[in-house]
Image (cartoon, rainbow, N blue to C red; front, side, top):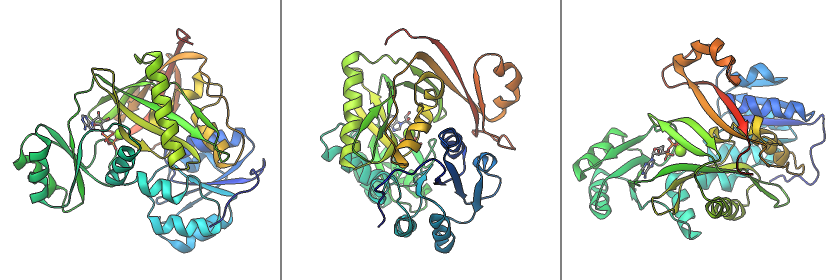
Amino acid sequence: MKTLHKPVPPGGTIGIIGGGQLGRMLALAAARLGLKTYIYNDAPDAPAFQVTGQSIAAPYDDLEKLAAFADACDAVTFEFENLPAHAIAHLAEHVPVRPGAQALAITQDRLSEKTFVEKLGLKTAPFFDVTSAGQACEAFGKLGGRGILKTRRFGYDGKGQAKVSSADEAAKAFESFKGAPAILEGFVDFAYEASVVAARGADGGFAAYDPPENDHENHILRRSTVPSRLSAPQVEEAKMIARQIGDALDYVGVFAVELFVAADGALLVNEIAPRVHNTGHWTIEACACSQFEQHIRAVAGWPLGDPVRHADAVMENIIGAEVEAWQSLARTGALHLYGKAESRLGRKMGHITRLKPLTKP
Ligand SMILES: Nc1ncnc2c1ncn2[C@@H]1O[C@H](COP(=O)(O)OP(=O)(O)O)[C@@H](O)[C@H]1O
Ligand SMILES: [Mg+2]
């Protein structure tokens, strides 16, 4: 495995696996720091290809193409967490990969992720391993209430999830996943959702952004708002949760911890995203150093930037056909469009951030 002993200097090349909007915003941030990007995506026409000097469209398990890509980069990172483990190991033989294989392996599987979080002494929803319809029934019995069955891997925006309120529904939901291993989680009657976007540097340095409050619609993030309703001690607790997770994963780069805030104020960890996160997009306008610049800094071995927030902010996603209103949207805030040719139902086409003067420093 290759490690990086010196920072990647300006003019160096950061490889990014995945060419969606996150890769695109990472590439834009890298360009501002004088770094080049090389983007690897499994399909052509990727949003990030429009803003990078070098790109390649090839399957994520094409080891030869991955090796050639890695050899052309000074460090490699990801905009998504689902690269096969053997492909990551292969990349790591050629180039420093940040975050590393172990952090990705733990967080790309909901069972290993929740087990890891629990071992750290942090709170989560109750969860059970489910590998058969019979086990789904049994797990539902242990839960003693409503639950959500989730595939262990490859879920996003609520895909691979089903709410269940009986043992029979749990078994049927498992069958609808066509044999994919799953977990059954207890349904958390949360007051609201929040998240911490944080970064860990190669030297173990840590920086966390103020946690936004997040609203979802149809399982897709609608809006992130800072400041959230969290009290000052809860904000500190949320940041400490992220720090504990980042340290335990020996993480390098930006990651997000999604939280459920219970009615009694308890913070439960929902999931860890080992990458820049949709609930951190407001940092582009509202913070001294955005989550995208922060990630590039960490991956390149630079000092972390200042996560201080200079404004209150509301970030709203622009989903599907909502993008047709781009002209009126452009009048009301900082508009980001991702350069996607076609709008489809539920597809994230852009986002808009609206700032207000800082109320809670
Ligand atoms: N155990 C749970 N109890 C209540 N709501 C949940 C639970 N798990 C997920 N949700 C809801 O579904 C959303 C998406 O679930 P999540 O596990 O974060 O998957 P994804 O990978 O799709 O983001 C959450 O943000 C939350 O609104
Ligand atoms: Mg989530």
